[in-house]
Image 1: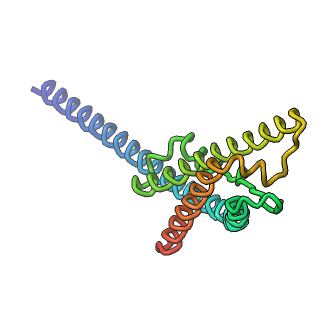
Image 2: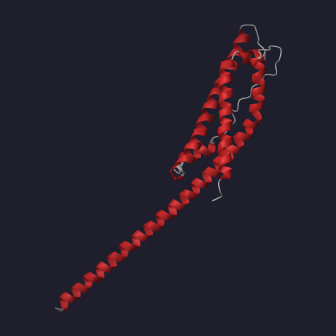
Image 3: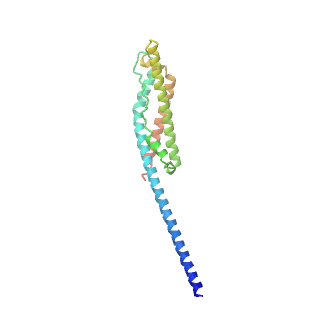
Length: 194
């Protein structure tokens, strides 16, 4: 009877130790998961701050370029070949490093969906703008080259006038991008600090 009792006590002791180990491991895993989630949330918050700073920088570039580009565009639309002040400067220097970093390091899943969607929309418009800007610059270069090759060099305003359809699209996208950046930054500045 004593042997049965010792075995029962031994099994109880082992069962208690096993349950204690399992509970300890589960607690450790829970703490580790909580800590990893907290770190990912902090990385996501930092990424959004970087995106906000990048958006401010991009907006400040557009706030300088867009009015000048619209003035030059107005000159182009008057078709005044005597006025060579129609210099369009597309914002090819707009940055997207913070966005690419957020998307490449796996923490985008820790950003609120609506906010991520809004940021994705801005950077999508920005990419379209840069694509059209590159197309515009290439078209200007090709037109200038062809006019020189043909022995009939064109003025800057004539070259830009030849690209008026593309320029119309570019100015519309530039304005849309500026509006989206302004709206995003206005919303972010009105949010309470975390």
